[in-house]
Image (tube, rainbow, N blue to C red; front, side, top):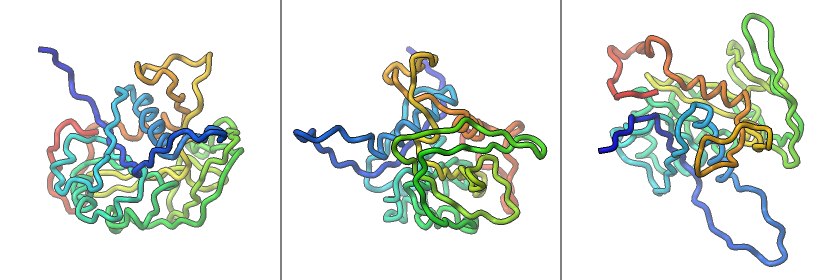
Length: 257
């Protein structure tokens, strides 16, 4: 009998796509947001040296119980349709509080959609949304010094959500002072928010790049340094995660990230 050791799993919630065949005389359209979100999820797993498997959530409603999420380590929300599923949202929140990790893509998900997921942790505000064709990400390094990642140039604008965080909060990556990502602790779990569209996190795989490790996705985009750092944040902390105030003992949910 062939045995394969369990690895961290990733689930991706997308909008329901309406398939449309090719139309004569119309130029090929750029990738949809759903395709960009798929690239983000797989490139995220590639950066974590995991397999190419991403479980897409196609059901109209999420499972009604937290136990149904126990086989998932990362839940990526790239759709706002969860707002119409209060039972599934409650189950997801229970799973999150037990130690799950949720990644919310704010370029497609409004903060109000995940308000019930966060509870008191919803302490930020969306100011506006802009499209960026040329931008540079500043990375906060150790001490008082900062580093700058390479300039990105895009033919199609990359959506960027400008978010206002509490005054005392310090973020690690910014564009013109606005956060590129940030996180919130919810019980034993953690929610990561990305404010930059998927194409700002990876680039096309070119001839000089190392080959993709994914057999079925040889042209998978190359993860940038920014995505690799975010993926590293989802790794387990040394010595485990301490119990937040109000919880007497951690939930034993298996080999969770």
